[in-house]
Length: 135
Length: 135
DNA sequence: ATAACACCCTACTTGTTTGGTAGGGTTTTA
DNA sequence: TAAAACCCTACCAAACAAGTAGGGTGTTAT
Image (cartoon, rainbow over all chains, first blue to last red; front, side):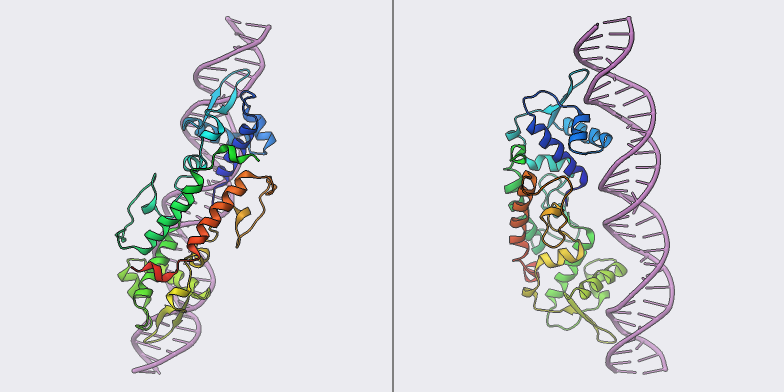
Protein backbone atom coordinates (compact mmCIF):
# COMPACT_ATOMS: atom_id res chain seq x y z
CA UNK A 1 0.00 0.00 0.00
CA UNK A 2 1.13 3.53 -0.70
CA UNK A 3 1.56 5.58 2.46
CA UNK A 4 -0.64 8.57 3.10
CA UNK A 5 2.44 10.65 2.50
CA UNK A 6 2.72 9.28 -1.02
CA UNK A 7 -0.94 9.87 -1.67
CA UNK A 8 -0.56 13.46 -0.52
CA UNK A 9 2.45 13.80 -2.78
CA UNK A 10 0.44 12.70 -5.79
CA UNK A 11 -2.42 15.00 -4.92
CA UNK A 12 -0.05 17.94 -4.72
CA UNK A 13 1.70 16.94 -7.93
CA UNK A 14 -1.66 16.71 -9.65
CA UNK A 15 -2.32 20.28 -8.65
CA UNK A 16 1.03 21.33 -10.04
CA UNK A 17 0.33 19.61 -13.33
CA UNK A 18 -3.04 21.29 -13.55
CA UNK A 19 -1.37 24.65 -13.01
CA UNK A 20 1.67 24.01 -15.12
CA UNK A 21 2.86 27.19 -16.91
CA UNK A 22 0.95 29.41 -14.51
CA UNK A 23 4.09 30.06 -12.50
CA UNK A 24 5.01 28.86 -9.01
CA UNK A 25 2.27 27.64 -6.69
CA UNK A 26 2.21 28.35 -2.96
CA UNK A 27 2.40 25.51 -0.46
CA UNK A 28 -0.54 27.14 1.31
CA UNK A 29 -2.61 27.03 -1.86
CA UNK A 30 -1.97 23.34 -2.47
CA UNK A 31 -2.62 22.61 1.18
CA UNK A 32 -5.98 24.32 1.02
CA UNK A 33 -7.14 23.15 -2.41
CA UNK A 34 -6.16 19.53 -1.88
CA UNK A 35 -6.82 19.39 1.85
CA UNK A 36 -3.34 18.36 2.94
CA UNK A 37 -1.95 19.35 6.37
CA UNK A 38 0.25 22.36 5.68
CA UNK A 39 3.38 21.46 7.58
CA UNK A 40 3.29 17.87 6.47
CA UNK A 41 2.98 18.99 2.87
CA UNK A 42 5.92 21.31 3.38
CA UNK A 43 8.11 18.33 4.26
CA UNK A 44 6.89 16.31 1.33
CA UNK A 45 7.49 19.04 -1.22
CA UNK A 46 10.92 19.68 0.18
CA UNK A 47 11.82 16.05 -0.25
CA UNK A 48 10.59 16.08 -3.83
CA UNK A 49 12.63 19.18 -4.46
CA UNK A 50 15.78 17.63 -2.99
CA UNK A 51 15.25 14.76 -5.38
CA UNK A 52 14.92 16.89 -8.48
CA UNK A 53 11.23 16.45 -9.09
CA UNK A 54 10.34 20.01 -8.09
CA UNK A 55 12.00 23.38 -7.95
CA UNK A 56 11.20 26.29 -5.71
CA UNK A 57 11.49 30.03 -5.52
CA UNK A 58 11.59 31.95 -2.27
CA UNK A 59 10.11 35.31 -1.40
CA UNK A 60 7.14 37.20 -2.82
CA UNK A 61 5.90 35.61 -6.02
CA UNK A 62 7.69 32.39 -5.12
CA UNK A 63 6.38 28.88 -4.63
CA UNK A 64 6.83 25.43 -6.08
CA UNK A 65 6.79 24.24 -9.67
CA UNK A 66 7.64 21.11 -11.58
CA UNK A 67 11.28 20.91 -12.55
CA UNK A 68 10.48 19.28 -15.88
CA UNK A 69 7.52 18.87 -18.17
CA UNK A 70 4.91 16.58 -16.55
CA UNK A 71 5.51 13.95 -19.21
CA UNK A 72 9.15 13.66 -18.16
CA UNK A 73 8.63 12.53 -14.56
CA UNK A 74 7.62 8.93 -14.05
CA UNK A 75 5.25 7.70 -11.38
CA UNK A 76 7.83 5.15 -10.27
CA UNK A 77 10.36 7.86 -9.40
CA UNK A 78 7.95 9.62 -7.09
CA UNK A 79 7.07 6.42 -5.26
CA UNK A 80 10.72 5.51 -4.79
CA UNK A 81 11.49 8.90 -3.29
CA UNK A 82 8.54 9.07 -0.95
CA UNK A 83 7.89 5.45 0.00
CA UNK A 84 11.03 3.60 -1.01
CA UNK A 85 11.04 0.18 -2.70
CA UNK A 86 8.34 -0.79 -5.15
CA UNK A 87 9.17 -4.51 -5.19
CA UNK A 88 7.61 -6.99 -2.82
CA UNK A 89 10.95 -8.44 -1.73
CA UNK A 90 14.32 -6.77 -1.10
CA UNK A 91 16.07 -9.44 -3.15
CA UNK A 92 14.27 -8.45 -6.36
CA UNK A 93 14.49 -4.68 -5.91
CA UNK A 94 16.46 -2.73 -8.48
CA UNK A 95 17.03 0.41 -6.43
CA UNK A 96 16.93 -0.99 -2.88
CA UNK A 97 18.46 -4.43 -3.35
CA UNK A 98 19.36 -6.49 -0.32
CA UNK A 99 20.07 -10.17 -0.56
CA UNK A 100 17.72 -12.25 1.51
CA UNK A 101 19.04 -14.42 4.28
CA UNK A 102 18.20 -18.04 3.77
CA UNK A 103 17.33 -17.93 0.09
CA UNK A 104 19.90 -18.49 -2.60
CA UNK A 105 18.00 -16.56 -5.31
CA UNK A 106 18.93 -19.08 -7.95
CA UNK A 107 16.67 -21.72 -6.48
CA UNK A 108 13.93 -19.75 -4.81
CA UNK A 109 10.49 -20.00 -6.32
CA UNK A 110 9.19 -16.97 -4.45
CA UNK A 111 12.08 -14.93 -5.80
CA UNK A 112 11.08 -15.78 -9.37
CA UNK A 113 7.44 -14.98 -8.79
CA UNK A 114 8.22 -11.64 -7.20
CA UNK A 115 10.60 -10.79 -10.01
CA UNK A 116 7.74 -11.27 -12.44
CA UNK A 117 5.52 -9.06 -10.33
CA UNK A 118 8.19 -6.42 -10.22
CA UNK A 119 8.61 -6.44 -13.99
CA UNK A 120 4.88 -6.20 -14.61
CA UNK A 121 4.55 -3.38 -12.11
CA UNK A 122 7.48 -1.36 -13.39
CA UNK A 123 6.30 -1.75 -16.96
CA UNK A 124 3.39 0.42 -15.90
CA UNK A 125 4.92 2.72 -13.32
CA UNK A 126 7.96 3.56 -15.40
CA UNK A 127 5.89 4.37 -18.45
CA UNK A 128 3.19 6.46 -16.84
CA UNK A 129 4.08 10.01 -15.90
CA UNK A 130 2.71 12.93 -13.96
CA UNK A 131 0.87 13.90 -17.10
CA UNK A 132 -1.32 10.83 -16.65
CA UNK A 133 -2.46 12.03 -13.24
CA UNK A 134 -4.79 14.54 -14.80
CA UNK A 135 -7.57 13.45 -17.14
CA UNK B 1 7.09 -4.86 0.59
CA UNK B 2 6.04 -8.19 2.09
CA UNK B 3 6.39 -8.25 5.86
CA UNK B 4 8.84 -10.58 7.51
CA UNK B 5 5.84 -12.53 8.72
CA UNK B 6 4.78 -13.16 5.13
CA UNK B 7 8.26 -14.21 4.16
CA UNK B 8 8.35 -16.64 7.07
CA UNK B 9 4.97 -17.95 5.97
CA UNK B 10 6.26 -18.68 2.49
CA UNK B 11 9.37 -20.35 3.84
CA UNK B 12 7.27 -22.62 6.01
CA UNK B 13 4.85 -23.34 3.17
CA UNK B 14 7.78 -24.21 0.94
CA UNK B 15 8.84 -26.79 3.48
CA UNK B 16 5.34 -28.22 3.56
CA UNK B 17 5.27 -28.49 -0.21
CA UNK B 18 8.64 -30.22 -0.22
CA UNK B 19 7.30 -32.71 2.31
CA UNK B 20 3.89 -33.12 0.84
CA UNK B 21 2.54 -36.68 1.26
CA UNK B 22 5.03 -37.45 4.00
CA UNK B 23 2.40 -36.79 6.66
CA UNK B 24 2.13 -33.91 9.14
CA UNK B 25 5.20 -31.80 9.85
CA UNK B 26 6.06 -30.48 13.31
CA UNK B 27 6.21 -26.76 13.96
CA UNK B 28 9.52 -27.38 15.65
CA UNK B 29 10.91 -29.03 12.54
CA UNK B 30 9.93 -26.17 10.27
CA UNK B 31 11.26 -23.68 12.79
CA UNK B 32 14.62 -25.42 12.85
CA UNK B 33 15.00 -26.25 9.16
CA UNK B 34 13.89 -22.85 7.91
CA UNK B 35 15.29 -20.81 10.80
CA UNK B 36 12.05 -19.18 11.90
CA UNK B 37 11.45 -18.16 15.54
CA UNK B 38 9.35 -20.98 16.99
CA UNK B 39 6.62 -19.07 18.77
CA UNK B 40 6.26 -16.59 15.95
CA UNK B 41 5.90 -19.40 13.47
CA UNK B 42 3.28 -20.99 15.71
CA UNK B 43 1.11 -17.87 15.34
CA UNK B 44 1.59 -17.72 11.60
CA UNK B 45 0.66 -21.36 11.02
CA UNK B 46 -2.37 -21.00 13.23
CA UNK B 47 -3.57 -18.06 11.16
CA UNK B 48 -3.06 -20.02 7.96
CA UNK B 49 -5.00 -22.89 9.45
CA UNK B 50 -7.88 -20.63 10.50
CA UNK B 51 -8.02 -19.44 6.93
CA UNK B 52 -8.19 -22.88 5.38
CA UNK B 53 -4.72 -23.02 3.91
CA UNK B 54 -3.44 -25.58 6.38
CA UNK B 55 -4.83 -28.30 8.58
CA UNK B 56 -3.41 -29.68 11.81
CA UNK B 57 -3.43 -32.76 13.93
CA UNK B 58 -2.78 -32.72 17.65
CA UNK B 59 -0.99 -35.24 19.82
CA UNK B 60 1.80 -37.67 19.08
CA UNK B 61 2.27 -38.08 15.34
CA UNK B 62 0.52 -34.77 14.75
CA UNK B 63 1.67 -31.59 13.02
CA UNK B 64 0.73 -29.35 10.15
CA UNK B 65 -0.01 -30.20 6.54
CA UNK B 66 -1.44 -28.48 3.51
CA UNK B 67 -5.20 -28.63 3.34
CA UNK B 68 -5.20 -29.00 -0.45
CA UNK B 69 -2.78 -29.99 -3.16
CA UNK B 70 -0.05 -27.34 -3.53
CA UNK B 71 -1.35 -26.44 -6.98
CA UNK B 72 -4.70 -25.44 -5.51
CA UNK B 73 -3.53 -22.66 -3.22
CA UNK B 74 -2.67 -19.37 -4.86
CA UNK B 75 0.12 -17.07 -3.75
CA UNK B 76 -2.34 -14.17 -3.64
CA UNK B 77 -4.47 -15.90 -0.99
CA UNK B 78 -1.55 -16.32 1.34
CA UNK B 79 -0.50 -12.69 1.01
CA UNK B 80 -4.03 -11.46 1.69
CA UNK B 81 -4.27 -13.55 4.85
CA UNK B 82 -0.92 -12.64 6.26
CA UNK B 83 -0.31 -9.08 5.04
CA UNK B 84 -3.68 -7.86 3.86
CA UNK B 85 -4.23 -5.80 0.70
CA UNK B 86 -2.14 -6.39 -2.39
CA UNK B 87 -3.17 -3.21 -4.19
CA UNK B 88 -1.31 0.06 -3.83
CA UNK B 89 -4.45 2.06 -3.01
CA UNK B 90 -7.53 1.15 -0.94
CA UNK B 91 -9.80 2.45 -3.69
CA UNK B 92 -8.61 -0.16 -6.19
CA UNK B 93 -8.53 -3.13 -3.82
CA UNK B 94 -10.87 -6.01 -4.54
CA UNK B 95 -10.83 -7.60 -1.08
CA UNK B 96 -10.09 -4.56 1.11
CA UNK B 97 -11.87 -1.79 -0.75
CA UNK B 98 -12.27 1.59 0.87
CA UNK B 99 -13.22 4.64 -1.10
CA UNK B 100 -10.61 7.37 -0.94
CA UNK B 101 -11.46 10.73 0.48
CA UNK B 102 -10.94 13.51 -1.98
CA UNK B 103 -10.83 11.45 -5.15
CA UNK B 104 -13.93 10.69 -7.15
CA UNK B 105 -12.52 7.52 -8.77
CA UNK B 106 -14.11 8.38 -12.09
CA UNK B 107 -11.74 11.25 -12.70
CA UNK B 108 -8.62 10.26 -10.85
CA UNK B 109 -5.56 9.49 -12.93
CA UNK B 110 -3.76 7.81 -10.07
CA UNK B 111 -6.74 5.52 -9.54
CA UNK B 112 -6.53 4.34 -13.15
CA UNK B 113 -2.81 3.75 -12.99
CA UNK B 114 -3.06 1.77 -9.78
CA UNK B 115 -5.90 -0.28 -11.17
CA UNK B 116 -3.63 -1.29 -14.03
CA UNK B 117 -0.91 -2.21 -11.57
CA UNK B 118 -3.35 -4.26 -9.54
CA UNK B 119 -4.52 -6.17 -12.61
CA UNK B 120 -0.99 -6.90 -13.75
CA UNK B 121 0.01 -8.03 -10.28
CA UNK B 122 -3.00 -10.25 -9.70
CA UNK B 123 -2.59 -11.83 -13.10
CA UNK B 124 0.60 -13.30 -11.70
CA UNK B 125 -0.23 -13.85 -8.04
CA UNK B 126 -3.58 -15.47 -8.72
CA UNK B 127 -2.13 -17.86 -11.25
CA UNK B 128 0.97 -18.94 -9.37
CA UNK B 129 0.49 -21.44 -6.57
CA UNK B 130 2.40 -23.00 -3.70
CA UNK B 131 3.62 -25.57 -6.21
CA UNK B 132 5.66 -22.82 -7.85
CA UNK B 133 7.54 -22.15 -4.64
CA UNK B 134 9.66 -25.20 -5.10
CA UNK B 135 11.85 -25.67 -8.18
C1' DA C 1 17.38 49.37 4.31
C1' DT C 2 13.85 46.74 5.80
C1' DA C 3 9.52 44.51 6.15
C1' DA C 4 6.77 41.14 4.27
C1' DC C 5 6.95 36.97 1.96
C1' DA C 6 7.66 32.19 1.29
C1' DC C 7 10.37 28.36 1.41
C1' DC C 8 14.07 25.65 4.55
C1' DC C 9 15.44 22.80 8.28
C1' DT C 10 15.60 20.15 12.66
C1' DA C 11 13.41 18.19 16.12
C1' DC C 12 9.67 16.48 18.55
C1' DT C 13 5.20 13.98 19.57
C1' DT C 14 1.72 10.54 19.37
C1' DG C 15 -0.36 6.38 17.84
C1' DT C 16 -0.01 2.16 15.24
C1' DT C 17 2.32 -1.72 13.34
C1' DT C 18 5.87 -5.12 13.33
C1' DG C 19 8.40 -8.72 15.14
C1' DG C 20 8.74 -11.46 18.75
C1' DT C 21 8.08 -13.67 23.65
C1' DA C 22 5.61 -15.82 27.68
C1' DG C 23 2.96 -19.06 29.68
C1' DG C 24 -0.20 -21.77 30.30
C1' DG C 25 -4.65 -24.61 28.03
C1' DT C 26 -6.58 -28.32 25.21
C1' DT C 27 -6.73 -32.38 22.49
C1' DT C 28 -4.91 -36.81 21.02
C1' DT C 29 -2.70 -41.11 21.33
C1' DA C 30 0.49 -44.68 23.06
C1' DT D 1 -2.56 -41.13 32.32
C1' DA D 2 1.42 -38.92 30.76
C1' DA D 3 3.70 -37.23 27.05
C1' DA D 4 3.21 -35.09 22.59
C1' DA D 5 1.81 -31.37 19.94
C1' DC D 6 -1.04 -27.82 18.67
C1' DC D 7 -4.14 -23.70 20.66
C1' DC D 8 -4.93 -19.27 22.62
C1' DT D 9 -4.44 -14.79 24.93
C1' DA D 10 -1.74 -11.47 26.37
C1' DC D 11 2.22 -8.87 26.59
C1' DC D 12 6.54 -6.19 25.12
C1' DA D 13 10.08 -3.33 22.64
C1' DA D 14 11.50 -1.16 18.61
C1' DA D 15 10.42 0.94 14.40
C1' DC D 16 7.53 3.56 11.53
C1' DA D 17 3.73 6.70 10.13
C1' DA D 18 1.46 10.89 10.46
C1' DG D 19 1.54 15.13 11.92
C1' DT D 20 3.21 19.47 14.73
C1' DA D 21 6.39 23.20 16.39
C1' DG D 22 9.26 26.80 15.88
C1' DG D 23 12.33 29.18 14.33
C1' DG D 24 16.08 30.06 10.13
C1' DT D 25 17.23 31.67 5.44
C1' DG D 26 16.90 33.77 1.16
C1' DT D 27 14.06 37.22 -2.06
C1' DT D 28 11.51 40.97 -3.46
C1' DA D 29 9.01 45.36 -3.21
C1' DT D 30 8.96 49.65 -1.33
